[in-house]
Length: 140
Image 1: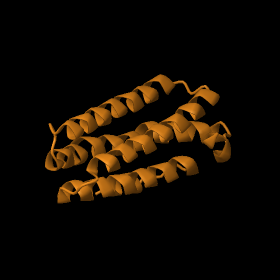
Image 2: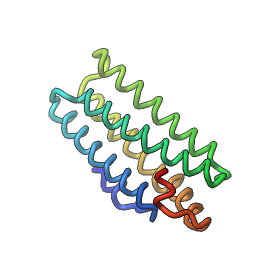
Image 3: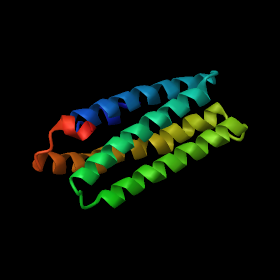
Image 4: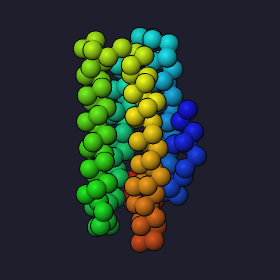
């Protein structure tokens, strides 16, 4: 299911590693949600925290290279975190069950994440590579 994330490489190693790890976490989330298994909220929280750290690394890179569309890129990060945290809160309150979360993961989160990788992250990586940013510095 997460092939749409895994198939796209930005050519920035830290981004690609983070995206692969996010896809692994998303696969685990989908598996838990499909099976209605315990641990779903904890797995979702882990997915969110992984991506919060990933977003911080990207935003640090954008700030260091004075990336012109950084505000738009960061706005997508903020919107994603708000959506995910809202869904987690609804899951923890019982308002959302495993099947409903699975639908959100498949219909909203996965397509948006894949689109973000193909557009915003790819553009950021291309800009960094053209600016001569070395990948180790991007991890800062």
